Each structure stands twice: as structure tokens, then as C-alpha cells.
Length: 336
Image: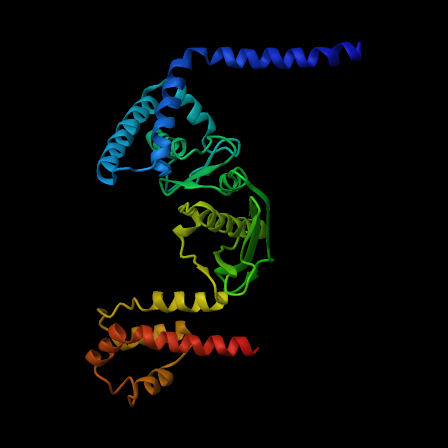
């Protein structure tokens, strides 16, 4: 009896597949229309069409793409079967994730038209609606790590793709660093990134109290895959993690954090009535004091300087001073 049941399994699977395929029959015309538009528009977006006449070709492609988006948007927003599919896949690891999956009191889930437009963009760029290949964050479409990996390994003639990373290292309360590298071959030629001196990749990753190690590594690898794709075919992808101030650097990550902070601290609210009080706060945040500030600018003291003089230094010279302080801090750190 058990053997008879096992024999029936393939038949049941085939019957199930046929029933699913049959259920899509009413959508066949819509599916064919979507595929036709995507097939015509995708090469334009990927810039894979040879341009014999740059001006006329550009205008022609723009009009084709605009019309294609118009057709797809109309289908995605009005066809009930397509709408049901998108809503079923939204906020699921089996489909695609958004930053509104766990609804907060202060925000609502995305409207359907917002989901539809992001799915439209995903379709034109060759991203699947399933398998978490893209995310919707801050109302925008962003490629996910899994799709970047698929793009790499499906590149024609590319083989032996290998990658790795260091363990995350906490740099500040808000940032951790992860070093990454990758090697691959295209035909008989070998390539690498993050391996040779002068080409090291160390990413600073924004973290929160509940950010786990796997999440930190995942963000770093996503950035790595983006850089690999850029090396392979010039593909430049937006990063979901770039919404926060995170940067790729080729120097020690501490240098990036210091410089980043210097740039941030340059935005001092000099319009405040208490200019000197504001300066003292910023000096404290930067990890220095008024004595260092005065020595650098050869002034007697902050108290004896006029507000206008301090304002001028904050607006015109703060960045130079902050970078000097941070370079000294970096030198001390490297000696430890």
C-alpha cells in the first residue's frame, strides 16, 4: 500500500501544477502583455542597446520607456488579479519585504499604488517578486542582497565566484566595521576586490541596540555584491543601507567615522544667541576642549573673543579644525 501511495505522488504533483497553470489561464492575455512590455523596455534601462545615432536613439528610447511605464502602471493598478498577487507577496520573505511590515502607531502600511509602482520598477530591472530580491524602504525600490548575488552568478562566462568577510568590529556605539573581499573568473581571466593592498574594502555599518551580528554581515555583503557588479558590468545600484550615513572606505574605518563626524559637526547652529555655548557643546562632542581650539587659531580665549569672530571661525574654519583634531585622535588610536 505504501508503494502505491508513493507512485501516486508524482501524478498528484503534476495535477497540482496543471491546476495552478489552468487557474492562470484567465490572466494569460495580461501576462503576455506585461512580458512584451518588459522585454521591450528592460534593455533600454540596462543600456544594452547599441546607439547608432545618440540623439534620435535617446529620444526614441525615452518615448518607448515612458509608454511602457504607462501601460504597466495601468495594468498593475487596475487588474484585480495582478493586485491580489502583489498584496499576497508584500511583507513576506517569500515575496518582498517593506519597512512597514511591522506597523507602528505613527505610520500606516504602504498604499497599494506605492507597492505597485515599486513592483513595476522591479519588473523592468529584472527582479523577481518572490525570494526577497528587492525591498521597499522609505517609499522607494531597493535591490536586495539575494538579487545581487543572483545577478553575479548568472553573468555569462562568470564562474568560481567566492567571497568572504571579517567578523564585525564595533567602532562606536552606532557603527561597526566589516572587511569584505571577493574573487571570480570570467573566461580565463581572474578578478578580485578587497584582496590587494590599496583595494581593501572596509564598510562602516550603522547599527542599533537590537542589530544582530548576522544583520551587520548581511548589510556588508550587500555592499560588497554592489561593488562586484560595478566591476563586472558597470551596474550602479542604490543601497537601502545608504539611507543612513554609511560609507565605503579604503582607509581604516576609524578615519571614515571621524571624518564623517567632522562633516556633521560642521553644521553648527551659529544663528543661536549663545554662540560660545554652542561651540563648547560641539567641542565636547568632538572630544576636545576650548584650549585646543584657542591654540589652533592663536586666540587668547573664547570668552574674550567677539561673537562675530567665533561665528566666522565656525562657518569658515570649523572643518579644518575638526579634521586636525580627528587626525590626532586617529594617530593616538593607531598607537594603542
